[in-house]
Image (cartoon, rainbow, N blue to C red; front, top):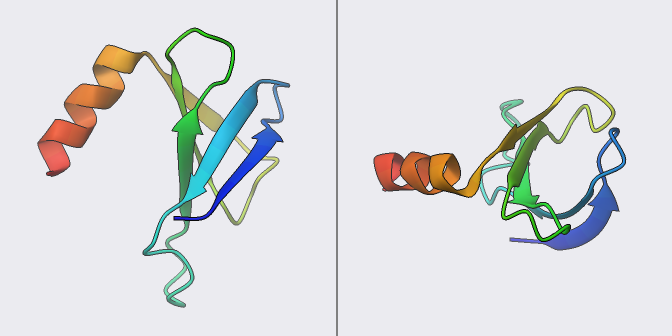
Amino acid sequence: MATADRSTHTGLPVAWHVSTRSGNGDGNCVEAGPVLDGSRRYAVRDSKDRTGPTLIFPATSWIAFLAGIS
């Protein structure tokens, strides 16, 4: 995954990771990464609309989500 430190439209610093499935031409593009403020939260956004909505999850919810898709 590619990584870049960019702020969300809300001003939160996030170490974004672009999904390896992004860019395959089907329009499903997602970025996710940890919020770099020590809160252990994770952010998710549509990489085609980086100024659009950003979902913020507490670490416990993010870990449960990842466990569910593994």
